[in-house]
Image (cartoon, rainbow, N blue to C red; front, side, top):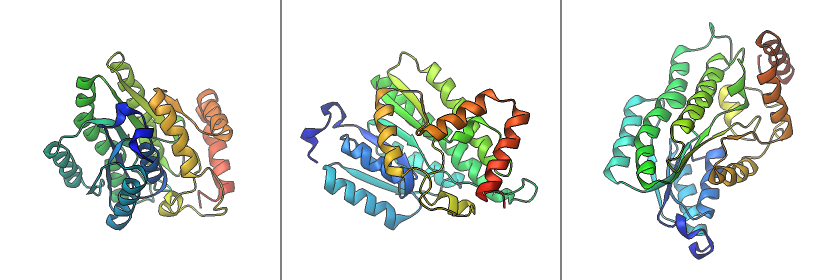
Length: 270
């Protein structure tokens, strides 16, 4: 796609996407490139990241930069922030997508893994938003997309810390959006449910049906359109909308039994 066919207002703007080497992050990279955004992509897998960057550059005639970073490590988060400062770019989009899950009873899971998860899904997001959002406000234009989960709205037994991280992200995003009202900068939260990515395998969740859930490409297509429109909350798919409705309206004492039952049936809690 030639840039002449994209929004001319995006030609000098960059999209910073974390976790861009696979899954939803990879799909978002293609969608934002199709909209004419240059790409600054970060993840841990050099080969996969380079493949995404080179393919997007070839297909959409956009510039790309990559930065390897393991966001479970505070020193690598800080290294990423320094890299952004050293080569200042006009970021029109920030996508905080990187994340992973840990399943099991809280007393039985590994604390180091959970602290790493908090680093990725809380610390890195706060630092990157602090680094990028002021420039957006100064230019009076920008979009922040935080990838959360339907679990943002419910306590999740056997994924206790993961659910808490996603709840934090929803609360943080909604409050930040209110603070940025009138600045030209929007904050959007994407809350997918089961998705056809490597996420479940990494979390140790059994793959009973690999075709279950939405494709990352379908989710990314919806997410980019509605992020650029400035929507606050994206919950793709009717089953996910129903889940969120129940999580928000049922008493916690009832809902946590429901979600435990559902995850038992899916094999998630084993």
